[in-house]
Image (cartoon, rainbow, N blue to C red; front, side, top):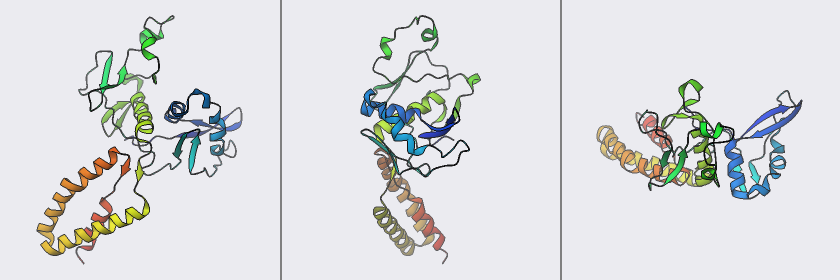
Length: 246
């Protein structure tokens, strides 16, 4: 299941080490800075080049800064996770094109057009509808083998890229809680859960904790996630459950 997307990829061109930015990094940086910042890409990404074409890696800096756009280089964990907020088909049926994907406010955020009219020479479809938009070209037919499993179900690769771009532009990085707040949150949850189990016992206490997780922690974590903040409450819960037999 696809949950993350690389921001850059090391490569070798004409026997020289180089680095290729991802589409979402390229699109987000250009939109935040304007086309005038195109020349800054090579300078900003130079520290991420491998030392040689044998693939000997370098230690990248903590952040990529391109003009006014900054994103961290953490390749694992939650930071580069895609927030899948743009779904594919509600029903697994070919859509009537153009097909509009709407947000929670019922506002179209993605429009899907048939590609064939734009592939003609000259194009038989108007290019005006693409003006001032991010245009991603891709296929949704099964024979193209570009359908991937995501938290929202199967999705064409082009829409995964759109979700990655949307994540960087609308939410930035998915950030974990700061170390201090995380420690205080974990300690508070461990103490609270321990008191509940000590007061009500394993049977009733487990029911109360289950309701607390479902009715309080999960909605609160979803709320924070909508603001690009990740709250992992499973660790303190696991600690309490492991210590319970003691």
